[in-house]
Amino acid sequence: MDAPIPFITTGADGTGLAVNQEAREVLNKINKPLVIVSVVGMYRTGKSFLLNCLMGKTGGFPLGATVEAKTKGIWMWAGDFPNDPSKAMVLLDTEGLHDPEKGSRTHDAEIFTLAVLLSSILIYNSKGAIDSTSLDGLHLATELTNHISMKAQGEEIGDEFAKFFPMLIWAVRDHHLELTVDGEDITAKQYLEKCLALKRGRGKDVTDYNALRETIRAFFKNRNCFLFPLPTAMDNLKNLEKLQMNELDPKFIKIGYEFTEFIFQNGLCKMMNGKEITGNMFTTLSEKYVEAIATGNVNIESAYDYMIQTVNSNAIEQAKQQYHSEMNTLVLPVTLDVLNKKNMAAQNQATDIFLRTAVNNDRNMQYFQNLNQLLEQFYQDYVAKNHTSSEDKCQGL
Image 1 (tube, rainbow, N blue to C red):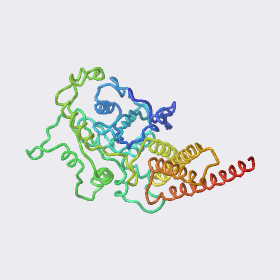
Image 2 (image 1 turned 90 degrees about the horizontal axis):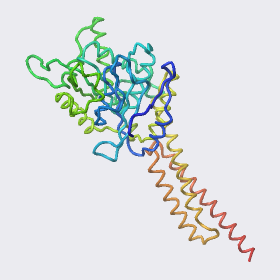
Image 3 (image 1 turned 180 degrees about the horizontal axis):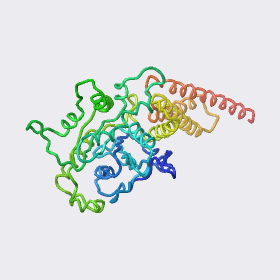
């Protein structure tokens, strides 16, 4: 893709969600596992710029030089994953949280929920330092269980969500504090863990302090942190989109390189129940999640089952078409030996298509069994047609 396109669009009033048709068509053509990187954060904190770094350019996702939020809904860019053409990379730029022009906390929760559900890597972008203000921007994490359930029934715990939720990368922009504790240097990840440490005590203030930190620690067990200085002089930030990478501050470029390399080296594919997600599977999931969010409750297990049903049903249809396409090259009548050989070749081609496109595991064996039953029935139909054709030819002699 040359440029990002809308992925999840919003209504004219800034609310309501839908999957964009153009994005759907792009994704459906990707038959490789997807590494899906989303960025979330407060509005006007430079989220889009981080994704542009992953694209290797300062332009791409629209950047704003004013206090007006640029991104609405969720925008998407797709391409090959760097250094590994067997995978594809999808970058998702989300609408900024807590935008005063929007004024809808519900809409914020929907966007945040989608970003978590759809990502294999979730970047949370904040400015300055990891403090109460930036932590408050992640407060929507505590509300995830109000919108998401893992199972169709039964009690759920944080560990179950953690198995499904993405890796969290906290990107702190315009960071200027020294990373030292008791006179000793610490890493950015150690800084993050220190900020997420729990306080001892039982009072309300301590309980409130610990609640969000406990949620982040429970839901996002795989997490890291990168601390970015200012990319350029303050008075030049308005021209950021026009600057080339080599015109940025060397310290910013260094952290940016470490940030992108970490993501490229930890290219986590989006998985569901051990299955890598491809483009058409991702489209189906996205549509189901958007539909479910409109009802106020997303059940991950139900969405996964729906995706399996849709993908595997399509795989069966493709396999059936291939079988008939191969068998229809025969000019009946033929000998039974010729018919059997053609049937074997057609069944092998149909099975190969199914195994390459379907979601296959122990839970879904019924789809493969259904296909085999269909192919056997088709073969018997061709045997009957061949017999009828042979009789007609004999009678015409």
